[in-house]
Amino acid sequence: GTASVAVALSVLGAGLASQTEVKADNTEVKADNVGRVDVDKIREEALQQAIGGMSNVQLRNTLAGSFRRNNELEKTIQEKERDLQELRDAELNRLNEERHEHDKKEAERKALEDKLADKQEHLDGALRYINEKEAERKALEDKLADKQEHLDGALRYINEKEAERKEKEAEQKKLKEEKQISDASRQGLRRDLDASREAKKQLEAEHQKLEEQNKISEASRKGLRRDLDASREAKKQLEAEHQKLENKTNF
Image (cartoon, rainbow, N blue to C red; front, side):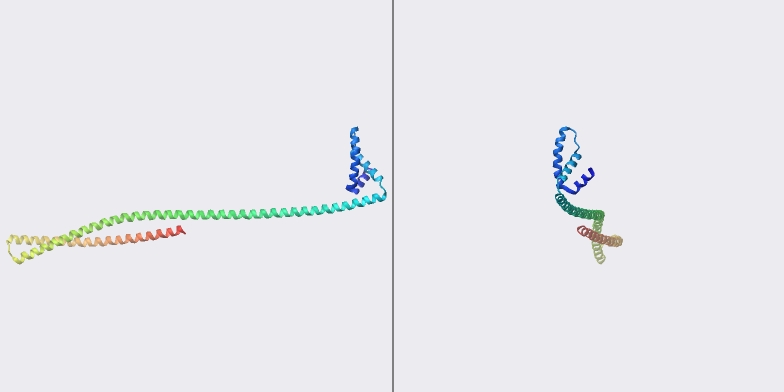
C-alpha cells in the first residue's frame, strides 16, 4: 500500500529514488496529455515496479548501499553542522570582540572628550583670571602714572621754592654785609642809621619767615620723597606680579 511504498522509498535512499523519479516523470508526461494525473500514485507504482523487478540479492545490495550512503550523508551533515556551528561561534566571538573593542574605544573617546572639556574649562578660567589681573595691572599703572605726574609737579614746586629761598638768603647775606660796613663806618645821617636798623628788623623778620618756610619745605619734600619711594615700590610689586602671570600663561 501507500505506507509500505513510502517506507521502502525512505530506506532505499537517493539512488533508487532517482530511478523512480525518472520512471515517474515519464509516466507524468504521458498523464499530462490526458489532463488528470496523480503524481504520488504514479511514483508509488513506479517504485513498486522497480522493487518487484529486483531479486533479493539486488534488493539487499541496494538497501546496503542506501544505508551506507545514508550513514555517509548523515556523517557529512553532522560534520557540516559542526563546521557551521564553529563558523557561527567564530563569527559570534568576532562580533563580540568587535563590539567589546567598539565599546572600549567609545568609552575611551568619551573619557577623552570629558578630559578635554575639563581642560578647556580650566583654560578658560585661567584666561579669565589673567585678563582680570591684566586689567588690574593696567589700572594700577594708570594710577601710578597719575601719581607720578603729581609728584613730579610737587618736586618742581619744591625746587622753585628752594631756589627762591637761596636767592633771598644771598640777598640777606648781602644786606648783612652792607649793614656791617655801615655799622663799621658809623657814617651817614641818623635817619640812614634808623632806616638801616629798620631794614635790619625787616630783614630779620624776612629771615625768620624764610626759615619757617624752609622748615615747611623740608617737611613737604621728605613727605613727597616717601610717597615717591612707596610709588616706586608698588610699581616693582606690580611688575613682579605681571611677570608671574606671564610665566603661568607660558606654562
